[in-house]
Image 1 (cartoon, rainbow, N blue to C red):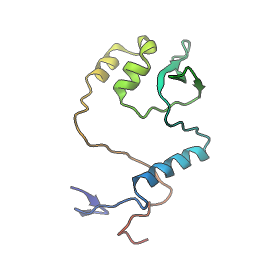
Image 2: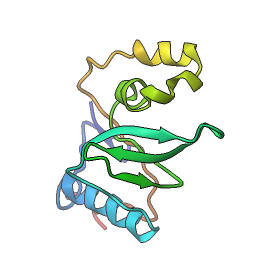
Image 3: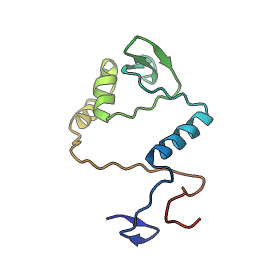
Image 4: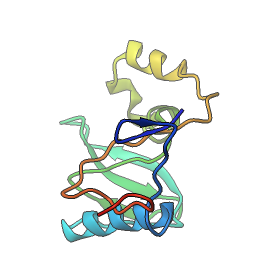
Length: 126
């Protein structure tokens, strides 16, 4: 388990910890005009009835935040079956059925990223 630059059993760690990776991703997104909201509860993803495209998130307090692009970091079940519930009629029923049957019992997660340069990892010469 684990591999780094072809060496099995080797592990790399992000300099500054996983929080530093999150901050780097957030910083890159902000530098391209993204707005990131934390500690906010989303009650709905609003969809334009004509185009079928997500157009806003509605917060629990009723605030509506409009955007050309909306990213969700919750599960597909929560995104498509709860947050898009009012708009789910426009989604194919076989898709919604597939989402409803996703098995989330594995504790493993993976993120693939594209970086302009290799991340600085302890134990990896620069």
